[in-house]
Amino acid sequence: AVQLVESGGGLVQPKESLKISCAASGFTFSNAAMYWVRQAPGKGLEWVARIRTKPNNYATYYADSVKGRFTISRDDSKSMVYLQMDNLKTEDTAMYYCTRRDFDYWGQGVMVTVSS
Amino acid sequence: DIVMTQSPTSMSISVGDRVTMNCKASQNVGSNVDWYQQKTGQSPKLLIYKASNRYTGVPDRFTGSGSGTDFTFTISNMQAEDLAVYYCMQSNSYPPTFGGGTKLELK
Image 1 (tube, chains in turn cyan, red):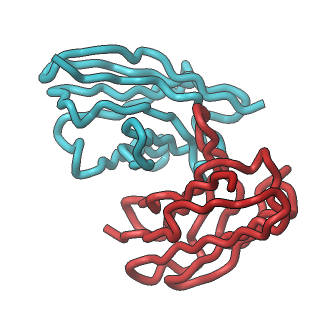
Image 2: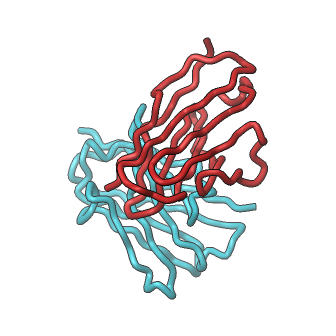
């Protein structure tokens, strides 16, 4: 069965950094584009980042709200996708979900809280 | 970015009701609209893809329709377990964008 399991969330102060991870299983990870989507408390869904596959040069894309601060990466040998978040702002506080191409499977999410 | 406007934002419904909600795109997105269900404390779950295709295992009381800029999602016979927030999402052009959600509550 397809599984996506996020980890690494927590409480950080503004301007600090945090790296969250997503462990994938149950499908051919190297063939799948991967995404991060977030949801601020009580709010709707916001796409954050995308990383394509090796044949597509691992091209990355970002929402304007995080461009220049967040970096998505992947390790196909470990079936892992990461989100490095730098210069965090209070408005980045959200549940972060990992999801794969077609958005058909989602992880349970990991909470990131940015507060002083 | 394409704006997806969902309506209504909330609905008070009874078990057995027929529930219809809408999603309007700010520009033509073809049939590239998906519908998701999110129950409290859970991650979103894909119900309908490409406007009208029911995802694997999704009960047939859930249907989607539309193309271009106007899309409709219907629950034909509301069940208690269907209480949730429903989101539309367009994937026709980057970035993918979501509607604001329609929350279903018991009357």
